[in-house]
Image 1 (cartoon, rainbow, N blue to C red):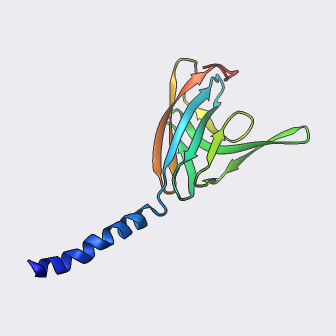
Image 2: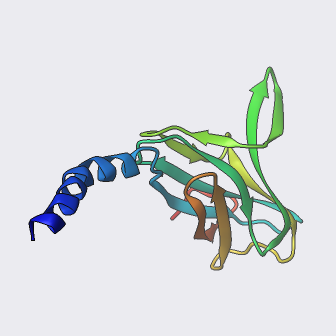
Image 3: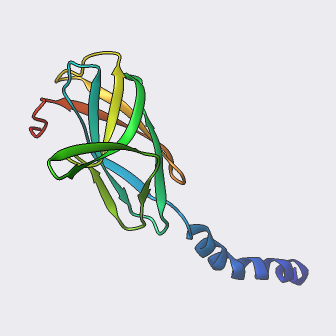
Length: 149
């Protein structure tokens, strides 16, 4: 009996340390407030709020949707009186931060829509993170004004 305890005791004592090490760098991403703007053209936009409740930074690497030929994460800025949109190759989400993809700023661009985005339907969107992996959300389509629930 004492012989087996001699081997078990170091393992039992090391378990709290191993558990603490396992949490380091863990990503805890949550996605909320997903919605898409109604559109009858071949492009549309979707919006979400991404929260990183973990203790490590993460990165949004890409977005996908079955309703569009191509999906990109964009940032929109005003330079003087000119609105500029640019594709983001990656969107960092720092530990403890929340990033809102919203009208007038960062957003998910749906390019080459396969169907009109009409109020009453939902758009499936998959967000791909470096650490958290894939997170799927359904984005209900709101009127072109986009602010009504």
